[in-house]
Image (cartoon, rainbow, N blue to C red):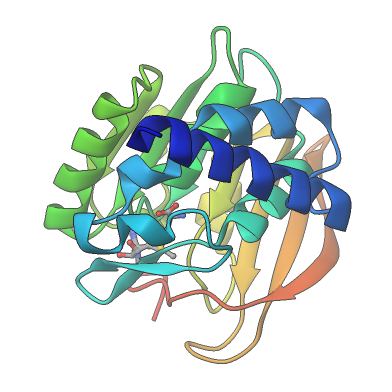
Length: 219
Ligand code: SAM
């Protein structure tokens, strides 16, 4: 069996497992996860582990998120066609690629990464995987991306001490933000903030463990 076929089979098996565990619930997230080749976002030497459900190293002390966490966040985001999305913490670009499938046609993901080498690698990964509606920006995402605001959806892929008002200002009315809030290491919480008529409501979703957000409004 050739490598592409083998990875495709492993991807289908993993997606079915996430579906049966309830991490994937919707046909949209299921087909997005089936359509993104995670092996293209992982360094060569560990590519064979692409469909094991855990975070993997991508260099510079950072990780590609575990597939179940990407699935859970994709479900909780409830993103749809035409939306403009901000991701804070690009990493390998994998999570942005999955979200980019949920907002087609017409939507766009802007993703900010503070480590230049990772931002460049993510651009290559996304282009190899054929993701045309994702823009990777090198910079400090802890302040958001005011020049592209407002966003229908904002999500963090690294843990922040809190969600600053200056980032919430970049959320469109009717939009929602998924944040990872908690200490630099150890257990953190996934929270969802919704903006309606200028008012913010907050829900605690689940526990999680992410690398810290480093920057002006981070650690
Ligand atoms: N979801 C990503 C993926 O699929 O590969 C993994 C993201 S990784 C867990 C978190 C990323 O956030 C790291 O690449 C880290 O460098 C980045 N990060 C941390 N602080 C940041 C900041 N202030 N601005 C932008 N990126 C930041």
